[in-house]
Structures are given as C-alpha cells and as structure tokens.
Amino acid sequence: MKKSNFDVVVIGAGPAGYVCAIRCAQLGLTVACVDAWSDKNNKPSPGGTCLNVGCIPSKALLDSSHHYSFLTNYAAVHGITTKECDIDIAKMLQRKNKIVKTLTTGVKGLLKKNKVTFVHGIASIKSAKEVHITKSDGDQVLVAESIVIATGSKPLELGFLSVDQKQIIDSSAALELGKVPGHLGVIGAGVIGLEMASVWSRLGAKVTIWEAEDQFLPMVDKDVAKQASKIILSQGFDVQLNSKVQAVIKNKKSVTVTVLGAEGESQTEVDCLLVAIGRVANTENLGLSDLGLAQDSRGFVEVDAQWKTNIEGIYAIGDVIGGAMLAHKGSEEGVAVAEQLTNQHGHVNYAAIPWIIYTWPEIAWVGDTEQQLQIDNVDYKTGSFPFTALGRARAMGDTEGMIKFIADANTDRLLSVHIIGPSASELIAEAVVAIESELTAADLARTIHGHPTLAEGMHEAALDLDGRAIHY
Image (cartoon, rainbow, N blue to C red; front, side):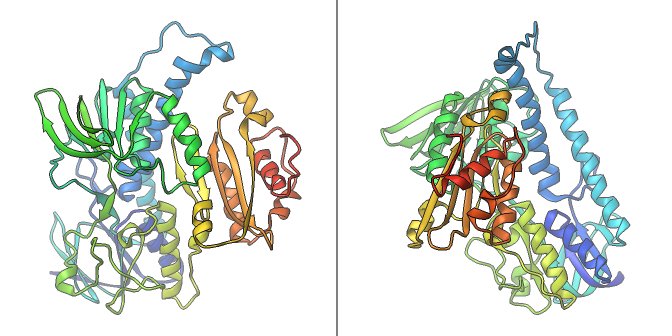
C-alpha cells in the first residue's frame, strides 16, 4: 500500500479544514487535506456541508425566493407592476447548483495554488501519526507529525423517525425539492428550520413549524426575539411553541404529524416534513473509539483551549468539537491551529464571533444577550434605534426591525450588538470589529457614518446609550 509523508494531515475540506490546510501550507508545512464529499457525478467536491448543502446553496435559494417575494408582494409599492410572475423551480435549482460547483471548484484551485495535496477518500485514523485512506483507485496511508480532525457535523435525527429524503427530509433534501410543497411541516424553529421555511414559504408553501421549547429563538436577545416573532408570524408562518412531535405516519401522498402541545394532542397533515432539530458530530469511519480519542456524551470530540485532543499530535476544529456551529468560527480555529503548529500564538476570541439568521428581515448579533448579562450580574446600559427612523430604510421600503447596543455601565466598553433588520448580516461586521478592538460606545458615537445609509442606525444606537440619539 502506498505511503506518503507530510507534516500535517487535515481530515475534512470544509471551511475549518481547507482553511487550516491552506494556512499550514502558507507557513511552510507540507500538508495533505483529505475529504470524502462527492458531487452527483461522484467527483470530488470540497467545501464541506457549508458549500455543498449548507450556507451557500441555502443562501442562493433564499436570494432567489426573496426576489420572487418582492415581485409578487412589494414591487407595486415601488411603481413596478408585472403581468405574470412564474416560478421555474428547476432553473432556480440549476442556478444554486452552478454556484455550488463554482465555489467547490474554487476550493480545489486554492488548495492546489497553495501546494496542498488533496486526497479524495474516506479517512480512518490508525494512530497518532497514521491515517488510512479508502479510495476508489486504491487505498493509501498518510503519515504525519500532526493530524487535524475537521469532519464537521450532520443532521440530528429523531429516534422514532426515518428520514427518506422524499416525504420526510433533512436540510440537504430541503435544498433539492422539485416543486413547492402545498404544506410544509418543520420540526424545529432554529436557524436551519426558519431559513428553509422562509425559502418555501416565499414561493407559496403553507408552513407549520413545531418547536419543543416554550420560547421563540431563545438564543437571541429578548428584544430582538420579540420583534422577530411578531414579524415572522405576520409573514404567514404557523409557529407552535412548546409542541413536541410524538409520532409521524407516512401516507401515500402526505405525512400525518401527531403533536403534543399546550392544549393537548393534535394531528396535522402535511405534504412534506422537514426535520431540523440540530446537528451532531460527523465522526463516522474515523475509528475514534478504537483509537481511544475522547468524545463527550453527544459524540463531539473533546479538546482543550489549544484544540488538542487527549492524544498527543491530534487536534480537532469546527463543528466536530461542538459549540457554535458556524463556518467562520471553524475557519478561525483552523488558522489558529496552523499558527500554533508553527510556534505562533494563534487564538480565537469567541466573544467576538457574529451569529446570523438569514430570514427576512435578517437577524444578527455578537456578544452576550441582555438576559445572559443579567444572569452574570453585569452592570450594563442599553441603547437602540429603529430602522423605521432611517432615511435609507424608508427609501428601500425595509423599515422593520431595530439595532440594539449593550455597553458596560461603568467603562462604556461595548459588550454586544443585536440587530433585526435589512442587511443585518453586513451591519454586524462593524460591531465585531468594535468588540474585538475593545472599543467603547463613545468611540462609535464619535465615528462619522455616511448618509443616507443603514449603518447610520449603528451610530444612532451608540448615541442612544447616553440618551443622545438625534433622529428618534
């Protein structure tokens, strides 16, 4: 069997893995990056869940469905009328697939450009220095001084529910529906559930969402969650909180869902049921148990503050270690590990990681929620500004939502920013820079923001911390 030697072997070519591999190569290490993802033609498709069946394809469909929703519901306000507005789902999916193909091909190009050896196959770790690769053209052994596990995550399934990817689907299949379902049922009102529900609701599906928790978006700041609930419900979603799915029966052309809610048991018939209850570590085939590598009760790989596992020379990053399952978080962990392997001081500031939900309006935040600060007995102050008071938002016709700042009451240091509104995913970047740089709210209040822009809301919210907002 062929053996190849490297300084580092990275298992997984998602945002954590391929970024780690590239940074290792930039720092002078010899690197192999192993990945098992394949496209429909069984060709290598690096990029992990994010590029193949996650961040990128979902945003492509969200963008397409947003355009359709604008034309059918809001264009008339702008003086734009259309005689006909049809949906071509096949073409929409083709566009999405083309974007995915372009980006996964781009990742292959980046790996090659940085002289990373890309290996398409299934990896199994045999020892702290040896990885066995099962490939279609013959197995291979990679020997390395360091191994980085970056195999990501996969959808969590309900034990009593069998996902057939036709009537009962996960998030991957939700990106491939050939037609708009008449009634889409969704188990889970988290990020994935809400985003996929948004796509198909905009295209005409009736949507019912069952959430086991008794709060809507409990991980979001309470003021933002309150507005989000009001806005999303106004868009036609039927969101049932404190509702646990008890049983699911597949019929010939529908699915019957039995739910236990606050008012007792009920049944709902849907055309398609999406299971979006979370994700678990993807460690299948790695051989971690035989290796003795520590995992927690949920299967996530356990690491220390430097992303080291309990086995010397083996590291883990990204979704596979749990925590915030965000592509950009995994990428930064990849960079940090690469720099540590070359005796630098790589680190990740977890307090400055942005979170984004791509509903419309978008939701984004960085830092702790107000409710968490209360639990931690932090002395804080708040300031906020509504989009309805912004000239640019008025001109756009997107006035729903708000920007909320939270700062330390004694030092004025910015602690967190929470946004629900248009382009929240872009606006949050300013807040991330501010928190990473340990700026005060006064620093942002003194910073000139262009007019008319949505970013003026950031300026006004900072001013409002001291009761100095000008335009509201």
